[in-house]
Length: 212
Image (cartoon, rainbow, N blue to C red):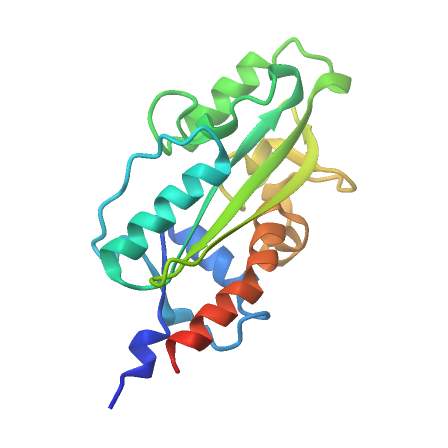
């Protein structure tokens, strides 16, 4: 008998437990067949991390999803995201996670960006969070969606929620930072929410085909 439960698993190319919870919460209403314990992160799968040397968010998301799919034989999703500051020509961009030098040092990245924008007036502190979400299936199917959330950079951090640059970003239409929003409220307007909601029908189709 075929193990449909095993086949229905979805691999996620991340080691960030906060991101796993966030993405599952975004996908779950649109992919009802995806149980929480069927969304498996790369760390749990002991999958190697590829070199993310693509020139765009889309390219890096595909690099990660392709590598995880190849390593596990499972359909794989990945995202690559960051913050693009207008006056800095779109930087940090794809280098957002390692802007201060060490990959994933959120506090250092945040401090450096605030220092770099220290003398910039409020009217020139526009920015956008960008997320590319990729899906790669064992049969070679690939799909990428991109989401954006526009807003501005604050002068001081505020809030304990979220991660990354959330404490210094206020989305358009909001009066608090992303880190002060509830998880549900953030997902409704976030770049990651937009990208993964657009990807959800393709995820649902792949998971359905994997159980046939």
